[in-house]
Image (cartoon, rainbow, N blue to C red):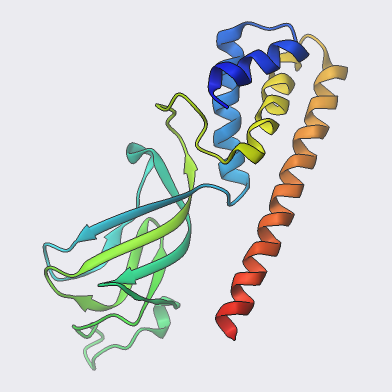
Length: 195
């Protein structure tokens, strides 16, 4: 479904300005990607210097990093670690070489070892979508109609609190269900990894 069709759907439920509804739908998508792990993005780079620090995507790039799914170094999956688990030399500096793991600190991905020039890093991650240049939502169609509940809630909040409350309940139920579904999916992946 595209933004226009979703706006049409909202107009069937509430009497509000089309441009307001369109903007609220996009705001709802941002909220949904913030509250649920449903939007996947990726970032890749070839290192131009020896480093163990990769700056994660920010709002300027459209997809704000939220949570890692997988981190690859030259095509090999790295394991999630805590920074204190990294191996250090006697002078407390990191070893150079092939990283075996990574940690997230602030807006940085830290590699367990100082990687070489030319090494390739690829990060698949859950993201919050903050820019809307597409003609349709980036979330999967299964959840797109739920955006209407958010838009209708916000559009009626001042003028009709009772109706707004109904849309808010529908929105919250959708978010809970999405998170439950996502939790079930992550548990399945975790079990597979352990096996």
